[in-house]
Length: 120
Image (cartoon, rainbow, N blue to C red; front, side, top):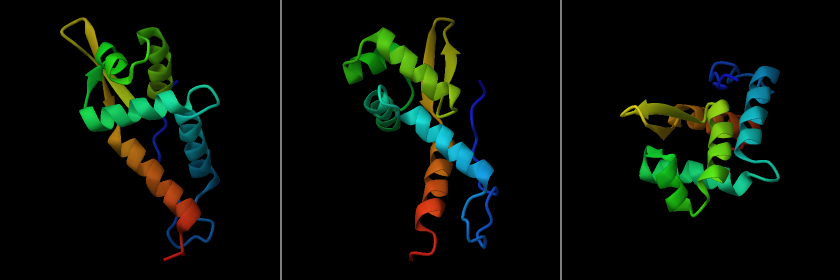
């Protein structure tokens, strides 16, 4: 599955609906990737750890979050499939996970447009 990239031009600032159906679908898909009934806390904590500590390998994230490596790997895969994080292999062995700040920023902008447009 390819990552979902929110297009900040997908809704017009003058449009009363704030978001097109396409952008709303993107927001829904990203929110689902961050949290479902079984993974909300783990995925949110992983995103926060990458934000605070910068790029990390899974072993280091597992230690930082006190979550078993195997459990964390599945959650990181979900976040990567949604495009919220990316992986890069270094030294031929380790995969470094990086927060995709642009995707997260676009999600925040879209949510703000959806819920708070015109409330200033």
